[in-house]
Length: 271
Image (cartoon, rainbow, N blue to C red; front, side, top):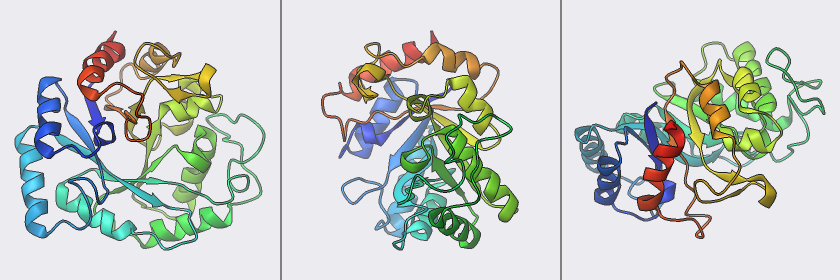
């Protein structure tokens, strides 16, 4: 499988450093964290965007996602279109967004059951936040994908699958896909096989990270947690989804740097 990484794992690093990390570790793709303190952000000029795209493409890399902090279900206005435009300019597959439903215990898939691939466990109807998500997907430009990550209010595969099923029904031809953060679905009681069956109609790529369930699913160094990586690899056998290491060094400074982690992650994900 091809391996990518998120620049969340090297916060504030230069493009030169990111390209060096990719070249030295047989990396094929990047998730570019979009923020004011990173070389990827919506304030880039047209010339800066062209230069960034050219350098990444010349290095033989694909941009899997521009990783925004847009919350699709939020009440407040969200800069979705600006990030979609940036992603299109950079040749990215899409913009990573969070669900961010402010009322996470309501809406589609909020039932108490574990859900199945054919019945993700729906309730009577969408939450107010999920309706806002439908509206945003309906009106958004469709040049690149909106990539919904299994995160926060919709970390469980059953709940994300219910939202995506609703999108398929209510917004035909929509451009939303799923970034499957496999550690998040696991933390919500779903095995990799169960989550995959729920999410596979919409998956664009798969995020991996080592976590420790004994420490409330805290990210830890590769090989020191208990995330079932072999179960995930078996589940994905025969597919061609890129695996992307979402190394959360920005938020968890106790983690080792990417220079140490990328070789370990490749061995971990290809054993």
